[in-house]
Image 1 (cartoon, rainbow, N blue to C red):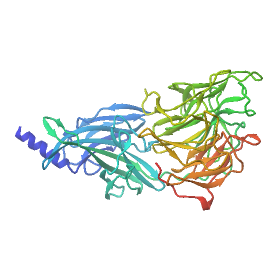
Image 2 (cartoon, helix red, strand yellow):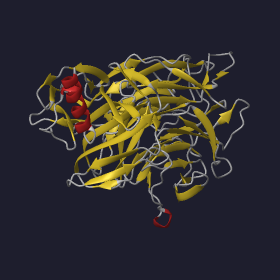
Image 3 (tube, one colour):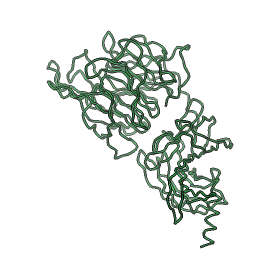
Length: 535
């Protein structure tokens, strides 16, 4: 027994400056779990205490268990094809320093090279984790505890050039930014004053260590936008539009005179065009006729949520119904797949993706000819990282439709719209997905700007375009708006789609009716501000 305790003591003592990392192996798809000061096995440290680690691989949104085999100084494993992130947790043991005994717990994570989503949040299976984000030519990291940022956490980072630097997170859980392309390895610590007992030994606190390994660099510079893209196949308003993997996707919309509704006036078409030099629109699998909805993009897939469809023939009284159906389009298979339906039908709302969260805000439920609409008073959230997840409701401090939304980090900005009294508002409401609390932002500038503006996120900035024509950016202090430029003509019920350093104005209605032409806007040189850090 004495010998066993001596061996365990020296194992833990030698690990005090060591951390559990998941590192790529020499062969494609292979990995090693090491306990080391570097991103390689330490020949002086045995791996026995790490052997109980439960390893997982995320493949197309599903978390699959991965078996490991043990050598003297590392655990070895092979990841399934298509893995984007490998991760796990292990209780290492207790360590005593002076009169304080701590339980050591490690949470390693590996972002696989060429993963399409380097900022993926694992979630429930990895309570303490590090995510990353590119900022221009630099990379920074954030520590999350159950999805919430952790301030004042300390650690260190191994840089691609072999240097090591100390780390500390700010009030939003972010580290400083780092330049350089190549493999990074880092750890950050979170201490919890939570007593307990492990292996017959009592401890007074838990020390949790998150580690991250990955190939990180600045994203490729976007090619300059073409001077023009072909006009929409039909002039439409109240459509869905989103950019994903170099394409602009558009769905449905209203293709007739204002306030004219029938099964022929609303479209169910689905098309795309290459953002860099596309000459024509490609037809994709169609769906139900819909307007008053938008599209979202997540890990290369296009998501459609709710919407409104007329059920009357042309010339008959309007019979408009909101729908609850949701679907995801996969460009790889060229097919739509059903997602969990909304708890209640909804249209004239907006939808955004924040991390792995699909968020629906505002809108109402139309029940057909002669029935009063029902205004929604909750936002909805669907965790796309969990295959069996269902919609969760969050109370809204408003009832509005014909609004717009944009996501920045863990916040969702809801701008403008019509309230339940059919009065336009220029108000801005902000939902923090970490606290599920709402706050108020600065009103949208202008006069007649509340009804159906369009917003998006460009280079970590919230941009909004209104019917009056100006394009605004939310200032870095979050309390004011800065004018960037002005569109050639005002639009409403249109969409903003980011591309490079600017945005495309897609569809919408103007004084002359629906618009087919696309317009690209970039900030005027004197109004081109630096990125902000509102997230």
